[in-house]
Image (cartoon, rainbow over all chains, first blue to last red; front, side):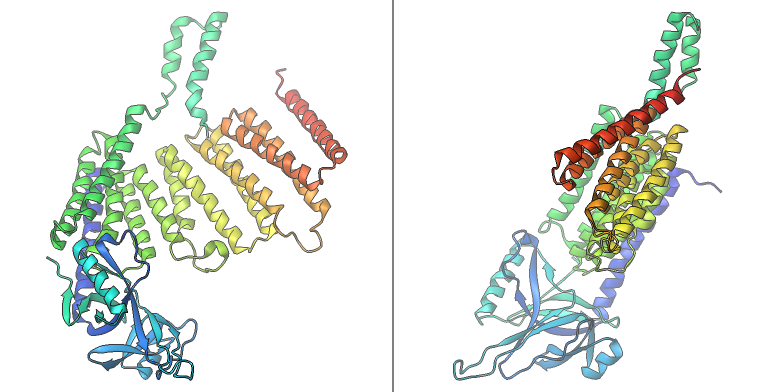
Length: 195
Length: 363
């Protein structure tokens, strides 16, 4: 049976539209069913000039001078997360596979991290210097309308001075992927809604 | 890159007028003879403007949907995006039989809208996807639409998207990636479609895409001269095959002939500037390379003139200029030596020209 061009085009276009709807539905379901965690975030400096409708984020865990960097090897693409208090999670370590990661921490997530070690207290710096773990889990921007984007950017700047607390609300699915659900700013949740 | 079919009818027309003038053909046969030759379809200004306008309209639709963040909520925005995509696909389907050029333009816009729909859907629902997968997915959709509606524009969009997907998050051209670029499969498909559907734009794009694949092979060889020489020879053979199709008057084969000839000469030229096999990286080897480059350019110029392929002739002349400068440089600006080499090349060129003239002279 030979199909004319018109029905062929509509069949292909329909399949493409269904595929796109399928991706949205599956991603939505995975986001809803995953385990929710809070991760500390910082603003990206300098902010993007074109960031009118999104906020650039950097998932970054602060390490106190008494803390230490978790083990890290090049090529590790799984991170073990563990609760560090108040519903907030931090990095327990990294590994090559999900199975290995589960032995390090309770929640495995696909990604990698780099650690800047803290400096302990010394004679020249009695308070010590904080370190940081930069976490790459594919969460690097939050799409939002321009007014909200500007408000969040301002809060992220205040966070740098220790006057605000901004966290990413992340859903970790069974597939190990992290999906952004929203932001928590000074205890208030700003979640994605479909409407 | 000129196409022989484009000028064939005009050349016959001029010949018939000459034959009529000489009394060899009767004047009343002129129109009947010309009617047996196909009229070559050129892209007229109105059609070109329709293409530009159509693509700009598609971009306007995409920009409108992506810009209205505060006004339209997420789900309606997604519905609007899908609606625009399906509306353009429907319009293309509706015009497929009656207005094939309009259908082609509309399907090109449909492919562009779907490509941006993938990105915009990711933004609308904050879906962190893989940029490479997004480009490849959009490219597959564009090729599927192209095959469904015989759209050269959508196929061109597909080729460009495959190229984007190949480059996103890859280090191929510094030899740091082992994945195979999708263009290895897409470029031959594009070339096949260009020849089957007779599309100049698609022919140019797919010829460039094939040369891009050769560049990928060259990058994987970590700048090895032998690999460049081999790739140059392969491209030369492909240029020969395209020339054969060109002589058979296959529409747009001349495009491939021109680009492959350019690619072969370019790869050959580069081969002389990357480290050669150990022990051969000498002044003599460099000079020999430049002389062969010059001779090959001269041969291509003769071939381009013989085939009446303007682009091939132009490529050969530019290549000759490059080869002359390279030879001068490698001879250390020793003018006596340079004069000797150029004299030798001139003698060879004249002998070759005389030989060709002898072969083509009517008996």
